[in-house]
Image 1: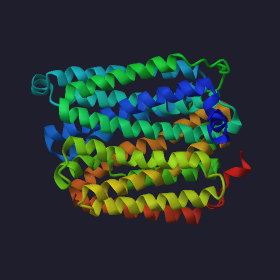
Image 2: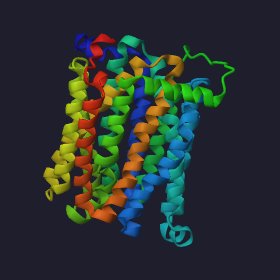
Image 3: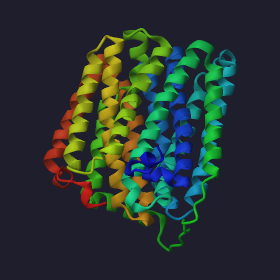
Length: 416
């Protein structure tokens, strides 16, 4: 057994700091996605309006995009570990607001409506705008270069396991015991994540002093991405696939009005993509996508778009779950490839800024995608809007194949 765990697939797990980082990410991801599921059901239960589900994404993406590039600048200058520590406290504060609000929801909703919920969503977006690039940059400090691909796979697998457990547990607790116990668990998980990150020791980080202005440094990070077609292509492809193809924001409506499975079913549906992604992540630990990487990436995104079209047309809970599992498996191929490209192609002194650009491309696309889904569902109807998004994803893939030759011919084996 010991020799099995000493194989190449488990090489990065022997790094203590990386194990602590994975624990932090696990608790953080469970809490964040669990909170997202609960908030989505709570808002739809209060309003019964799909447009409000779209506004959740909009309120979160505005602070995330606004702060992300500036965050990337300071992440390259300041102690990344401390940035992650302090920003995690924002998420703890937001979850505490939700818990207090939901403990007497009749009173607070009568006085303030859903405003306190959206305050928390705003804080979450602000924190994510800082945390997303900071976590990526911090991970690059914790491990040697030859383990980047292995670390990206483990990081993705860890995230997906948490993404399975978070919504499933959150939906079940909300459905059987109520909203207060569900939000209490979210607060507890965020607190655990804070303690996990505190134990990481980052001796290698050097705080940089520079005479360059903030806007000059931000421009240099953006320029680096646009000068690197492999990075730009992977970021753009994933951004538009998520923007048009994602149906996560509309899952409360599918669960309530089409599949009739309640909050318990919503939690399971939300967990299905992560189930598929987890399975795929463990496959990629032993078969990393380092050969013909560009072709594998394009095939994966095509598969994702087709799954979204099938999900939109399904009226069976089981079939819908299977399609979401497959969509998660395809999506995780893209996640691992993009994460590996980012680490391999980006110098350490620019990793925060490049990661912040990635955060805008990828992170904001989830929230903008939620807003787009809400508006499209309101204008076109729920099912037609998701079908349309799936076809738009396919269009983006074939356009990228045609115009981005370096990404099409990419093979990561040559960079490791």
